[in-house]
Image 1 (cartoon, helix red, strand yellow):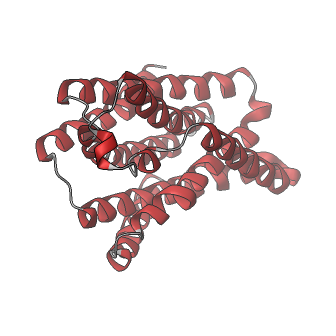
Image 2 (tube, helix red, strand yellow):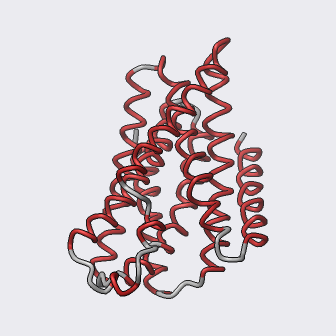
Image 3 (cartoon, helix red, strand yellow):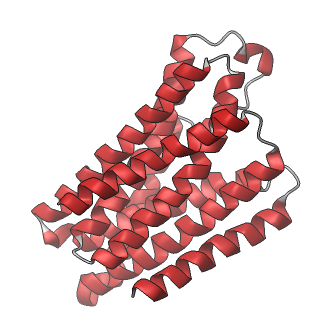
Length: 250
């Protein structure tokens, strides 16, 4: 349990670390943002496949593949429904800059809500990993999510500052999104701890949410500004780093 606490704080704090770096840099170019996010996407892709989806099949027994497929699609559909009500940050950041300057407290809350809701499944994924009892695999998932959170924390800063949100309030927003991820970690951990029967589905569900974020948001965003070649290689590098990490820990 102590390790879960430490990991939860580490996963949540990674977003805050990224936001501090973002506040120091302030203006991040599209090319840099695309490369960093693609690297993070590669990490998430490997973590979701190696740490969540394949173990789901292993734990599920004969019907493991069917349970895994169902979990993946349920996870993806859940995020799809969330997107219909709360668009992610890069969609909000596409608003006209003139409108950004007139942002009020409601828009600030919308930014925070969008990022927080999309961070919750990542926290749940980390918690589910620990609930499986495989500590090395759980640490790989948590490490991958934490590494992904740093660049995400960096790139959300610029749009929020452009929206007229003060640096202090922007940092507070980043802290709140990190706290949501900590909450998600414990939700995932306790849900699986209560009943091992739901473990295969829970693992696949968490993997499905991560795959959805990668395909629906991260890859399209990183290929929209002319840096798709560099972004592709950055994704491959991130994936291979996690592949090597899994081999070493395994």
